[in-house]
Length: 299
Ligand code: CA
Ligand code: ZN
Image (cartoon, rainbow, N blue to C red; front, side, top):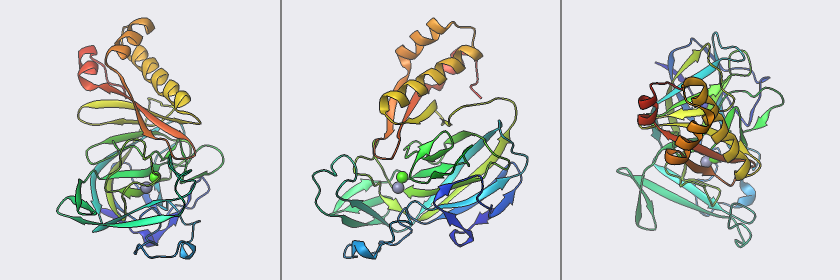
């Protein structure tokens, strides 16, 4: 299996001008190591917040050039495995997240991870290993690794876990795929602005799909197919995710727009991924049994 270490290169912006650190064939399985979102700078709760380089936040490892990938194609990324370090870190602070207006100082907490549990003041939290930052280079200007978008990026979607498959629109030759910001656990919303941040490695299989096109990332797992969207507000993101899913099902099925709208109103779920990054992210979730009933595949 191919491997990519953090030392090969990390960056803080998804950008089509970033030099790739590795070139792989479509269909390659690769293990990608990642720092945590603070670039492993917080190893103690006593660390001075002035000692941290706040420019080095959300490093993504890569980018990886995928042979044959061209603008308009889709990059299919199967999450095979997520391995994490033996401790996580969380942080809250003034201006950060939903409670930032009432929190007076930055506070970090180190959380040991033992036997599939995260230990928080003696409380055992179940693991929900996931990838916060994952995507391809966007079309125009670079986008900070703190910001989600049509290219993926900091989506902080707790469904991006082992067994999930992501689909990204490709905007540039080679796609320039990368990932970082693993979480040992995170709730929908990521309300305090950090998940349980961990270093680790994600093993993924990357494949170029020619033919179908998508506007924003999609995700599927064993049970559901989802449309992801990010925008300035949750309202806007919600509208984009639902409309793109409905348009896709109308295109693939023999049902009318009215009928698909009814079906989505009956069984579709709009869910929040995160509300604390520069853009908000949601997913619109459709059960796979419905797609089977309709006899369609979305990609
Ligand atoms: Ca994140
Ligand atoms: Zn994170």
